[in-house]
Length: 294
Image 1 (cartoon, rainbow, N blue to C red):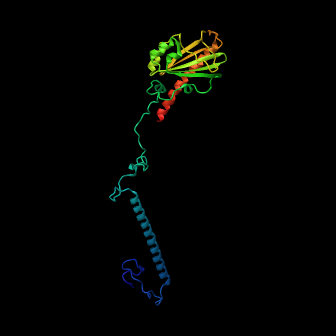
Image 2: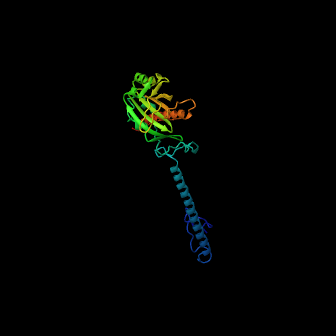
Image 3: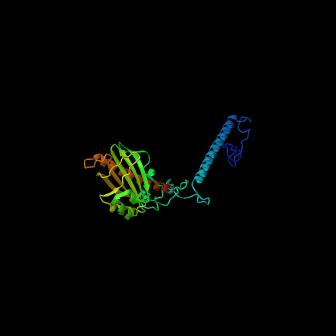
């Protein structure tokens, strides 16, 4: 007996072409439906639909993943994916940094420091105030552990009047413009320091070269300082720095002669000569520092 075009063993499948629903009165039971067969057919249809849904979801996931992968691969700006293999992609070292480039500076060299001696080597640059109390401030002087008491001071434009023996000639030859003196004492010793001022360092050096053992500053007394180095043997020194020549004359206030064994006298003269040098140098350092700042 034929049931449509599917044959006697065919089952109705709504998803299959040319499949026909079986008649409810087929079979030899007088028209009663085969409920077991219908239940099996319904279960088969439900299972097929579930498989179709699962398969469709998987295909959709693959499609989405493919779209994401295509978006990740960088295009060249025209929307087409690059064919560059991953092994040829730029490394992190090749990727430009977004941080601003460090500023570049042209190499420069700092100007050389100013030489303090230059400022005390000519009247044109040596413009700081000058006087006895500026060169020799205070009421006493300490050199190491030795303290010297400051006595009278003097300042004159007539350099020869403050010098004796062969020194006036040397001062005039160099063109001395000013001579400052101060006397310090310690016990029975006294020392007069003289600082002669010239227009240039060359003139000061020339004046110094014309001095000899008899070139001595005139001792400055008074103000509690007894006369010294008048007829007695005393010790004198001569030196120069920049446009300044400085001298010392040291002796005993009791009229004794200075001998080679008078070690304290030599030390006193050396201390005051060193102090005069330091003061002249500090004068240059102060003016060099002011020029550098200004």
